[in-house]
Length: 221
Image (cartoon, rainbow, N blue to C red; front, side, top):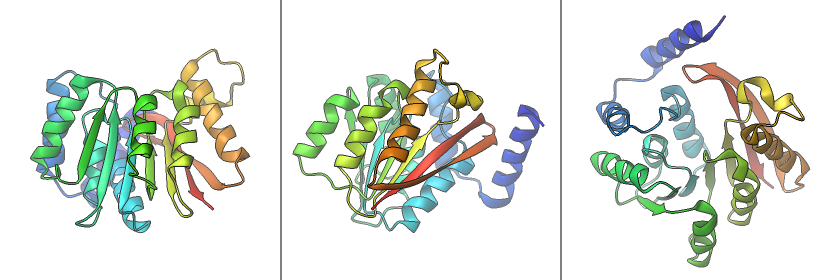
């Protein structure tokens, strides 16, 4: 087993379960053309986010880490007509690409892109009364996970689903002294989920076109 086989299996999953989608393909192409890092969720992971939003009956979604808007499109498509998704992106160039991708997908009316440091924009989102959110997806700089999770909980209600991506780090999450800030951020995420009486959580290891990683998922009590 290795990366080549994992990618082939991901391709098989997509072939069998995910019909061709010109809008999503165009978003990935635009991201690549503009030089964005190829760190979007995979198509099966995007569908998972879409299903989780639908299963939770979410009407308000908060995304921390937009990149080019690929995951944003997956989640926004799952919202009802009056649903809203607020997504936070630090890099203006990434946000501009995301804006174009979201417009192409016909979702501009549902998506509010906020540009700048998420840790600065989250208090503004709270002050504007945009919460509580029904679903929160965190996929941004890992060292800031403690702050992002704290705000996710503040902006949640009973029943809110919180998903934290990239928590396995190729297995390095088990290293207590890795010296890697992203690994430390993942470990703090586990401590946060495991140490909060307000949350019931689990985590899943994943392999696929994005390598060996995983996500943590929690529901607010």
